[in-house]
Length: 128
Image 1: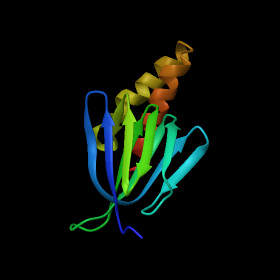
Image 2: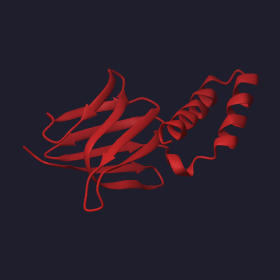
Image 3: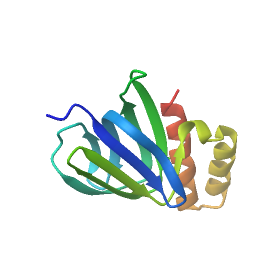
Image 4: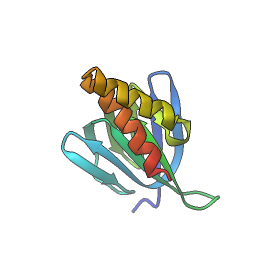
């Protein structure tokens, strides 16, 4: 059994995170899924939500939380690729700005903008 999995999380404009992990949790169209080393090969469509990465490596364990807005994930041979149009690390999220965006989206009845702001706020909260 593989002890770690290599993770690449890539957005349209940049590589968001790359490294070794012991567990990755993401929301797919079939529900939340946890991927650990040795998982069966998988291809899935991601929904907007927080991706939680339990890191592994020389510096010990930690957690990386990323707000993603749709995309795809693929796992095979110890390598997990997450491809998304937009991704934001939790420490990059401006909580006050996301709260204002959520209020504005609700006032304008913009369901897509409301979902994006909500995902940002949930990711920021999960990282605390």
